Length: 159
Image (cartoon, rainbow, N blue to C red; front, side):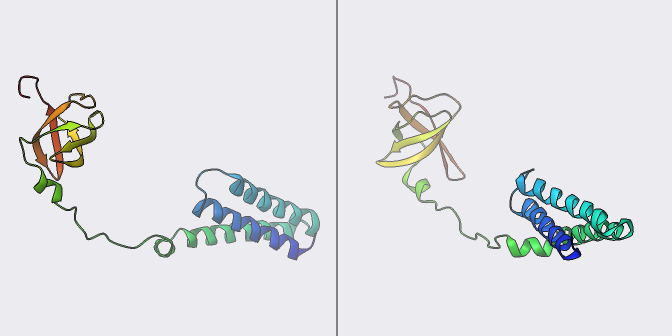
């Protein structure tokens, strides 16, 4: 096998390692194939070119793999690949204005502990105080904290 073919095998193996590290997490076919190609290139280097040249092929494969993977894992490389936007908006306080503590409504879905409720004609997500609340049960708002509506089941005599 020629030196050019061995270099191509090493480059394809390194490329597959990069695919493994950057795109496909875990041990997958890309990583296994990259490892096989690198080992195969070193084997063919020893087999075709002799022992001294095989040492150089192995050294070149190891050093080039470490350099390319080290460059790919630097912080600047990741900055180019990752999303770089900030969210500066806030959650609207519209639900807090529509609903007050003491308002009553009905559970649209079961609350275990989160679910949907209908209060003052508005559908919204709410959390129970810890009790499991069945669907279509009457609920009462007991707290509004951090734009989260907290409800408890309405006692039968309160209704």
